[in-house]
Amino acid sequence: MLSVVDAFSQVQDFRVMRTKKHKLIDIITIAICATIAGAEGYNAIADWGKAKRGWLAKFLDLPNGIPSHDTFRRVFSLLDPEEFQRAFLAWVSSVNMLLDHRVVAIDGKTLRRSFDPANNKKALHLVSAWASEANLSLGQVQVNEKSNEITAIPELLKMLELKGAIVTLDAVGCQKNIAQQIIDKQADYVLALKKNHGDLFDDVEAFFKLESSDAFNTITTLEKDHGRVERRVISVSKNIDWLEQKSNWKNLNAIVQISTIRTTVLGEFKSSRYFLTSLTPNLVDKIAHAIRSHWSVENNLHWTLDVIFNEDQSRVRDRNAAQNLAIMRKMSLSMLKNTHYHKGKSLKRKRFLASLEDDFLLDLIGVMLS
Image: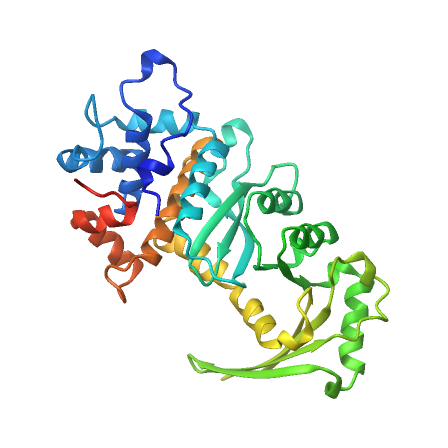
């Protein structure tokens, strides 16, 4: 694994010479370490750095000590998010934890308190890629205020190594050009199909209602949790030659229905969802796993960023800084989820332990002391 110092050493420094009292790599490394250890703002990053100055000096130069909170704020506002992301992607590729036929879930999230009324800017919305099995954030792209996720998803796909992966997207990403791009990346797709696709949705829904269940590859799952029983029937059909739109979707091999019966103390509730996939119908277990795994981007990434890293409470409104800090949080989360230290302990507890145990934090950032 690349160390944090190695991965971010090539990030371009946009500061003018007279303001460079501190090395850029020192500023970035301190900020990442502090974020892992629980810091959630510029003041906290600076305070943590001052408390750990002696330890940091073992592997950083620190020619003028620890930067002030204003220096951290200014630097992360100047750093180009694309440059910062490239360094992050270099670190991701070095981790080398991704599995064959892994599931890469793509979804968007709004940083709710990043709105800037003074400059008439809405809250920052980011589309992120999450490798479900590896518990690894793979990258993010900002959604333009005058656009939506449909334009951001192709930009995110461009920067990802997806060969052999299964890419899952919700309804907003169920687009013909996105399916084409995923196939061009030598990956497969499972795309949620909803009513915004009009005739295509109606045709698929009618087909599953009228066709005999004997014609489908089917598996059934049963889940009991918190007083709720949920039975899911996943049905996959390769009989799609009748589908008028088939030729518009690159490598479309099957359509999928998930029928859910949820039983609670309030009664029984039924629902059905539909998907398009390039996977072949005989891979029904893999298709079911991919659909189920898509929720990990919500539970293991977005929810965790809000609950463990307080991301939704961040009031950083500068667009560059907000994106750069979001990358640091995702990187910190990936490190904490994949560490061999303190297995079985919660992420919140691991963060706390990283603030106490220097060896643990060194292992997380990949630094070896001589």
